[in-house]
Length: 364
Image (cartoon, rainbow, N blue to C red; front, side):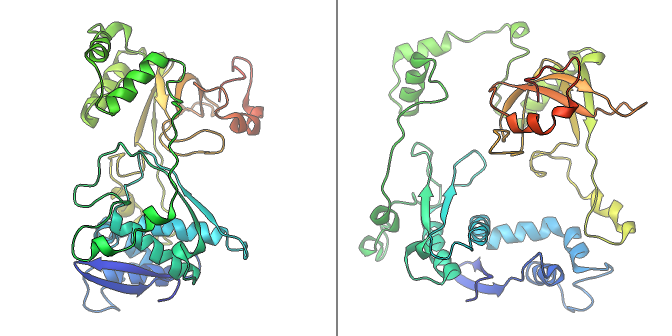
């Protein structure tokens, strides 16, 4: 199998297809996706339809194609990430590429079968029979997470058929190191110890009593601190409540501006934009209407600059709105104060010219 091929899984059958590079051969790339994941009879008439390009047709059927790719290519995200990492380090001819897969709330757990396929895929990509293609792997995870419903831990030994006699890549080739220092609650030792006992199921009656002692029903004193809810509906309801109760001069609504790239036929742009969902869980955290209130906490929902600490989940407080366009009600700059002073230092340096009287130097 060639380096740029991809596995498609269907029941117990593994198929391969040639995947053209997206950057250098975009039309071939989108044509093959349409052929694989849509219904068609005539490849000349049906694949492109009334569109001027395969890319436009792909955008029109993107939701359908993505759904099918997720069904038949369960490890596509992991494999694509590895391939990109290897391409970035391809000039290191005599060195092993260190691929680090950090664990966060958006990464999916990798099951045992996908872990073994990861090794095989790296061997194919690197053209090397060494384990994982000779690439160094650092696997990061939380052993207290619940295991996958339909599969076992990545390091567990299969117990069916000849599984007990098979070698275990993860047990035989990985050395485990447990991080024992608690960082998030390091300044509150008592609370950190309670949480640690709670996650192990070894909490005491006193632990539960202390946690319940922090319960309160006085919402008026808690309106400006972060809240946790079980459902997205409750989150949106609470945010809307805080926003509606704020004075008009303290709040803004910033509407998203969407545009289409890669489609030369401008007449199709409105049709494509109509397909953009109004659900931020399907738009990588991007909302159509961003509601902000001064002195109310907010969070970054995308990795803007990982090295600078401006990452998904970074907490901040909205401090000021700047308007640079005359006679426009649209905000030009939202100034925020991050809870960690080191967060956004690089951004502040790069945009220092935007600071003026009334803007604190530690705002970003």
